[in-house]
Length: 321
Image 1 (cartoon, one colour):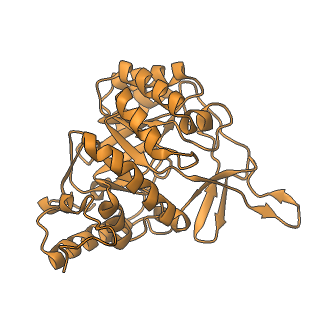
Image 2 (image 1 turned 120 degrees about the vertical axis):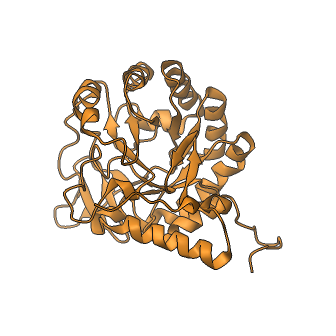
């Protein structure tokens, strides 16, 4: 097992939580924190935080197969929030996690505002460090898309979850909406402490011989390097609103290298999510951490936090030489 990252230059503050590195493992990619622990050389200690799999009030079996399909420079998935339900996660799974390894963030999903509130309240009475509200999952037929794409509904969910907990709330924003910055503003007013941006984009792949979609749910969420340019733009748009209120962002969408992570930091992210890249390189986190440190050395930065929002728009002078 690798040692916890102990270079203070990588440490960041996110919603009042001290993270050893800005890298965050994304919900759905590492199960409930144990998914990759059987891989030799892997350790949750290489991440600043781990977002657990999406959890609903009652158990869910998820969508019919096929639920994953590889696409050019990306991956479609429509898992459908398969999970054992909030009670089992809190009572049976959380006690097995080593909270000395890293920070653990619950991911709350639901079909109604009341369900979001109930699951958030269940996690409030647990050792979890923070709660991510998944209002933007694009592959659940009831609730998810409507909540994430409508600022009024987004605000209602955040308000309900805010009533249910004093733990840090992180709202996961959908890219499948007209004005992500306006949605972010409404969520800040409703009480969110942070954002994760972006969730997957809606996509489809078609089997030309069977003349049917490859995904059993017909459509799914597209992740991976294919969505990185869109994700960077959306993060920067959210940052323009969030920075005025001191609200941090987990930037995510196609991160597969230290260079990718640095782009998100410069665009306005405080931390950076890694997800799909883990599927083909489970040991990618130490490489990204090492790359971040090399970049800090090259440009004389004393902290990775100095990179957040440091992008200079074209037409303005740059302090970077």
